[in-house]
Image (cartoon, rainbow, N blue to C red; front, side, top):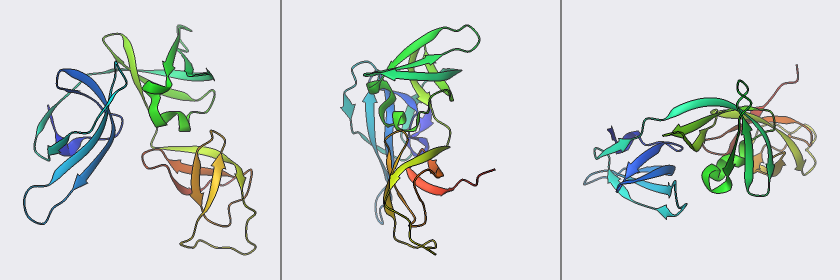
Length: 188
């Protein structure tokens, strides 16, 4: 059992007798009264959503998951194909299972797949990923870091705000928890 204040995006929990993936968990601190944790959950089996609120000290049943590193190969329609590099066994995960994690998947990258009772139920992304900017407006000459950002489309189709000096073809580091730009990756 864990406290609701420990909930994080990507965790798998048991709620009302069903398995749910935590899509989002926001802490609402209130001046008077108790603080709450507002969540967005996705039912692992049906894909339906739930939005329960918990007190920060409420106990929630977390699930013991087996984890296995697998290589992301490719996608076809709604299916994303992963391969175990030891046994060469391939599994298919759907958009419903992956959620917004598919915005960070790069072909041939190693991803940790979560299994519950032998069935794949989700993935665990690294905290940051490096992605190439495929389109953004031209950079400004002599631009420095400012508080204004411009939109940029990345190789996976994800759109993030970037500083004005970022140009097409550059590699940037993105936080997978928030979907925000962190920094430009230096070419080695």
